[in-house]
Amino acid sequence: MSSQTRTPGRLGYREYLCFPQDGQTHEIIQGEHIVNPAPGTYHQTLSRRIQFQLYQQIELSGLGMVYDAPTDLQLSEMNIVQPDLIVVLQRNQTIITPTKIKGIPDLVVEILSATSESNDRVLKKGLYRDSGVPEYWVVDPDEHVVEQYVLRAGEYELVGRHGDAVAPQVIACVRVNLTDVW
Image (cartoon, rainbow, N blue to C red; front, side, top):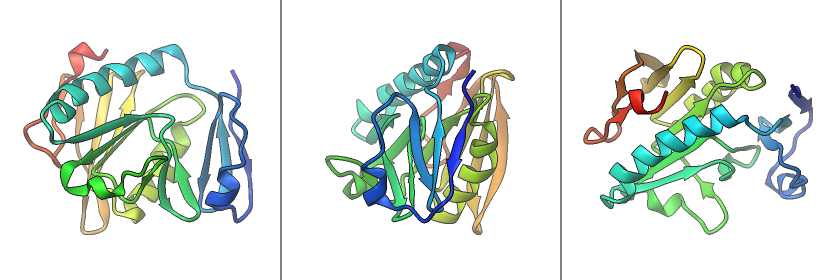
């Protein structure tokens, strides 16, 4: 299995646009270039199954949009990431541009892999928290759980570890049946 690589520096969106389209995940976090290998098939299966349920309940109802990787999410000049899933509700549609999402989405979902777990649990979680992302899900494919974090008073609070179903707090009428995901 390939490993993650990091290139220290103070990189921004202009440099990000010059990264190769080589099938790997290129991100800039706090100005540092981070490269992860392409996700595996099980990872992508989980992503597609979660996205499908969110799409049915959010997009088809006109409540917002659901994007999957490799959609660029630019949180600031030196923070450009490609989360596994991004939800932007109708009230925040102005952050969607033809080439990227530029601003704070309502929900970000990251699916853990051997090479991304540390980033997803620590680095990206801190980035999303500091950027003000209201809700963050960490999907653990080995444990078959979704850790649901909600931003409260500037900190992420773990509100649940779900194995059967999870409902985003940012949009109460939605429910993801996790038994259909695993």
